[in-house]
Length: 262
Picture (tube, rainbow, N blue to C red):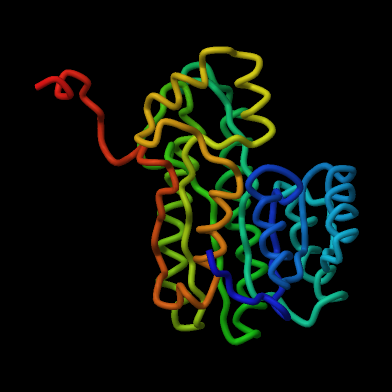
């Protein structure tokens, strides 16, 4: 796949130390862009930044709890000490809770909503003025197929990811006048470190996931990162307010086995 040259472009990536976020950071920097790499774990952030800088990448590591309002407010001043502006935001950070509405406490529900939805609101709120000052830019939010098709025992997760899709559309409408495009991607099952560890600990669950996917497999993080970078690029200059399914056909429809023999 041919990529744009992101030289001179600066992106903020939340949840950038591992998984899909790290794959986005890897691709953006590999094609000349600079990254403000944020994640909750300071050691993981610094380790990822050290590895990237050893390859010659331009990376500013910042440990950030997206649920810390004051910390989010400090993000842009810290970024502007190093860079002249911001061109793109990738809101990747997320978490899950395998509980029904009846099982979840108010605190557990709020934590998932805060992490998955409020983080998009908080970080976008401080980044949008900088994108406007730059003459425009792009925001790419990471939702999930669980925001399109509900998944059992994932009530807060599905609710939060569905809201991310709608918020994406709202922001696309509100900030088009500023030449700010806002889109989201909805990944299917992806081999992030957390999911890979879960699959290894629960043999058999991987097949259950892949059986639901038309392509019959799960994605590697880079396969999710590539369309995210496309949406942030000039090649997607007329795309805004869109939710792109990156799910190997998971949401395409239901496979009815008996029809195979009809």
